[in-house]
Amino acid sequence: MVLRLSQLFLRTLREDPVDAEVASHKLLVRAGYIRRAAPGIYTWLPLGLSVLRKVEEIVRQEMSAIGAQEVHFPALLPREPYEATNRWTEYGEGLFRLQDRKGADYLLAPTHEEMFTLLVKDLYSSYKDLPLSLYQIQNKYRDEARPRAGLLRGREFIMKDSYSFDIDDAGLDASYAAHRGAYLKIFARLGLEVIPVAATAGAMGGSKSEEFLFPTEIGEDTFVRSAGGYYANVEAVTTVVPDDIDYTNAPAAEVLDTPNTPTIDTLVDAANQLAPRSEADGGPWTAADTLKNVVLAVTLPTGDRQIVVIGVPGDRGVDLKRVEANIGSHLPVAGEIGLEAANEEDLKKLPWLVKGYIGPGLSLDEPVLGLEGSSKVLFLVDPRVVSGTSWVTGANAEGKHVFGLVAGRDFTWDGVIESTDVRAGDPAPDGSGPLETARGIEMGHIFQLGRKYAEALDLKVLDQNGKQQVVTMGSYGVGVTRAVAALAEANHDDRGLVWPRSVAPADVHVVAVGRGDEIFEAAERLSAELEAAGLDVIFDDRPKVSPGVKFGDAELVGVPTILAVGRGLVDGVVEIKDRRSGEAENISVDKAVDYVVNAVRTR
Image 1: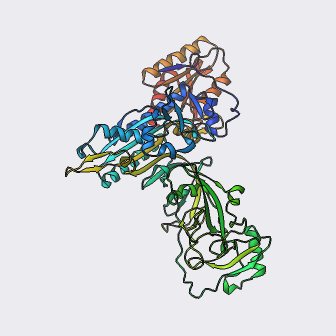
Image 2: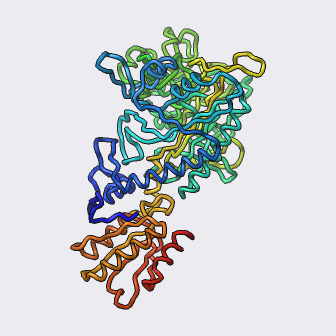
Image 3: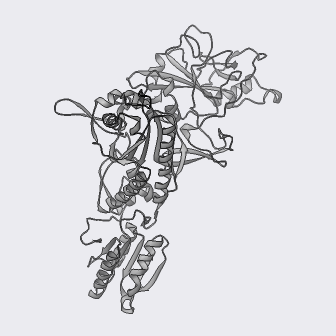
């Protein structure tokens, strides 16, 4: 079809919107693809909707290719199914909750696991009905505290979510592999270089999980990779754990006065003055010899506040995202949590936690970390804190530290947690070499959910022996609106967008440049012939707009081929420009349509 700019609902902008931080946000607004309706909420305009629908179609085709069938649920859902799985509470403040006029509770769905599960339960009852994969492309809602970066982190977004249903774990493995392969094809067709990385399941639950990340400096996710092929989200990286050390002949721990040493740096300076070490004993003390005890407060889904102390080597920082991803198994209640540094009020309630001098395992009058009776706090340690390691750490008294405190002998812990920052140069857990860090945008996420939701909602079928069997499930998501933003991030220059042909709003942008009727008539005729050849055409037929504005808009909008009809018409030629390479050629008018059609089909 031909979209005429004189009639198209489009206004381009010369200046970036004031709230835009990243290129995709700036250009999608400036080029007239989206408009802000509210923080994190956007209206899709005709050109934007065209790109969005083409992304959706690619997703649909690859889902159909693996036998998945499309359904469509409402976005407004009742509370009861989410109560059954505890996610009404677990989702915390991220869930949009509302009531109808009768006082009944509803939510705007962030995901639809419960509804897919109940739908299959309603219609299927035998193993003969499985395996089954269902999907939808639907609006989702999450009450982001700080929506940012346009479509990359919004409160309303479109996602493809699919779910597999199998009778056993072998079936789940096959469904997972099929979806993984489909995702790789989707992103390849979109022209996005996406890397699958190992990930944590988080609140979704389940076992195996992978994210598909688009590497970019503006990404919110940090991941690691090694030359040997290890890839993981930073939350999923596991530490190479050192061997236990025999502490039979280790000297007894000793408490020393260390006034004015509340930080690791001041403690290291004091240690080298008070108890200098020879090279034979390990050389000067460093931050790696100290045990730093970081006090955090976890707000549980119930609203209760749990104090957690994490012991880590002093040369490492605590990564709150890693803590949040890995702390769930240590907490008394599952679900979405709040996590922050403990405040002064928290510490007042636990007076034996002396700020700047906190340490585990000393026999004081009050319960302390790692000793029976310290139920008011949860004490977790980094995997590097293994039995026999010796530490300099707080003595739980103002101005005092203990030297030679041995793990497993002088103190114990409630659990081990991956919590410290992952650094370039750290060894990959699979032995494939040192790690390097990078940033990326999460484009998709796949999970082996297992039986969590099926058990909660009693989804069972009769197996081959006529016995009730709980179904096992997988969950698979692709961010459709996020894909549009990622494509804009990956395909632009200093003049505007440069869409891949697979998703561009048109195949060719015809520009009539000049004042003569013959120029507009020729542009009109070429547009009609291109349309008849099966191409989508944008035709800039605006009569009183300058050539500079028309060319500027064409480059901003980003259609792959620009065909300019202007002064060259007197010589029987038009200019055809490749938007990505910038290369332009003068082509005779009678060959222009074939030239463009060939370009569309071969590039």
